[in-house]
Length: 480
Image 1 (cartoon, helix red, strand yellow):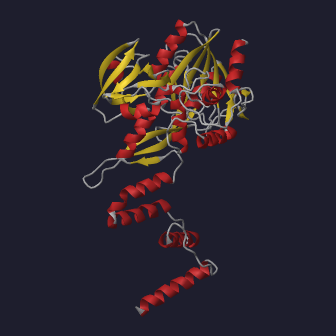
Image 2 (tube, helix red, strand yellow; image 1 turned 45 degrees about the vertical axis):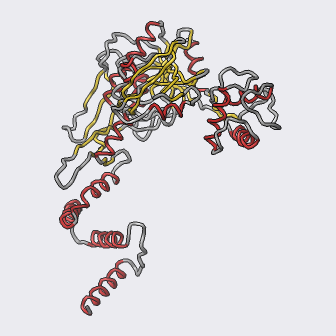
């Protein structure tokens, strides 16, 4: 023991000589980790010859894993964490969840809904989803779910009772044009569309792409058919807050804009012969069809930037909004081999960088729009609405100007209130209930004094976004 104490004392004296007597305090890494880091730094700084740090790292790692094999996954995870922000290790469970999020998948019946007077109504039936297979149609209204009356439910309440485990069946009674119809729908994994589109009139279309997943090209095909049938050739493509997605998906989607055979991206890998890998448009266009404005902001990233860059570089249109995020790298999954002792996942590894058709690399830089426009926020202004008197309790069945004032304000905040009139009807009751749930009050549907105070406070804190970017895009295209 005395001999050991002498060795420790000698080591401490040596470290003091090397580091000028500095006392090393323990950090969140833990004393042992910091202590080893200190010693390793001292060795590398004072060693007479060149040290092979990679060989040292491998030797230390092998030693640790030989004695502590249970640390294998943790060491792989730590390695990934110390590369760029887009490299991650996923366990098998995490990978499944990530894949579902990327594909925008969930377990349900495959419809989008909105609140309509008297019930929640199907707005869209997803193609090939369980609802489509069962025969549900756009405009059907939910009356019963598994024998339970749901006509008074909000969208969130209805969603909670319709959803359930994959493979189970839900019994629905729907109103279709005044006729009650029964459906048995088997819940399954469904994919919500990443594409939304509409006719803005005057030959102008609007297309929103929320992400680029494996279904986006098929969704884009439907949108393209819609625009062509309407004779729409001027198109606003909204990529704001689009985080990117699948490289193959964006290349296929660009096929509806970039003529066939033209370069859409060059991918530069480190370990594939150091040869740039060009990808070309896979569309059937001989000439450009659309005159495009792409809306961008600081959250337009990765594959969405690739799309925007193609529209600019091929002269297909102009970018309006704010500079994009600046992620020009490509990640691919490296699947790890599992053993009896270790069930391994996959590493999402940054393996390449992409180059736009014009030769620009945008990683860390982003893309500047041709017309820079900032949206603005304005404080909620109800001066043009009916004045509301905070001096009484309002509930279903009441009438008057104060009820109209309530409906005007609820509608502006995004609540469905049906007809904006002086009737405190069932739809306003449901809107009040939704608000009460959100602020932690009993969901009575009665506009009592406590609810009024919290509602008034919300109005004072509310700022309305004025979409100058979209307005500028509309004005730009209509002026062409």
